[in-house]
Amino acid sequence: MSYSAKDYSKLIGMEGFSETLLKNHFTLYQGYVTNTNKLVEILDQMLKDGKTAVPEYAELKRRFGWEFNGMRLHEYYFENLGGKAAINKGGALAKKLSERFGSVEDWEKDFRATGAMRGVGWVVLYQDAASDALFNVWINEHDVSHLAGCTPILIMDVFEHAFMIDYGLKRPDYIGAFFKNIDWAAAEARLK
Image (tube, rainbow, N blue to C red):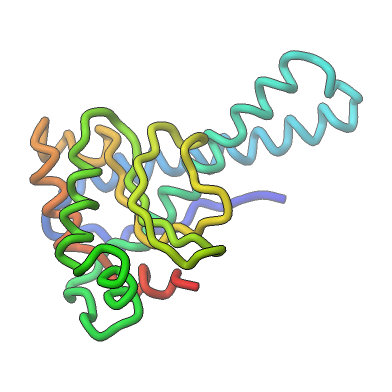
């Protein structure tokens, strides 16, 4: 089993994201793919060799969540970018956001506020499979804070590499650029 880095070069030229920023971000993502593959290979070999009781195995198992989620969250992030249209106010996602937050605008205020919090990480709009509820969640690290049984609907990267080249410390300006480029159809397609 091996993962391949996906090509997101179609995003180059997107308003508010320089080519340098995007290419650096793609390279970082490719590193997560490479490291996920390395860990799968090493862990499989350690299992075959009966080396599952050693500290190295345990640490690599723990590291796997970081690398895999780093890969997958970047894929979700890049895939929900590149849009030019506003959210479809009559669509299923807008309806669910309004039901949960009172309005799409109130949801957006909450999502932006979550992204503007101090620290680095991710903002994820999750849908709970059990209750159908939507939640904006802050994730510090790739491998912690995920809501079990929930589907990521919209992902925003707020690690420095996602914005500092273009925006320095002006994270709200980056968040504004992110919102101008959301592919709402991709986000809505993730709804269950």
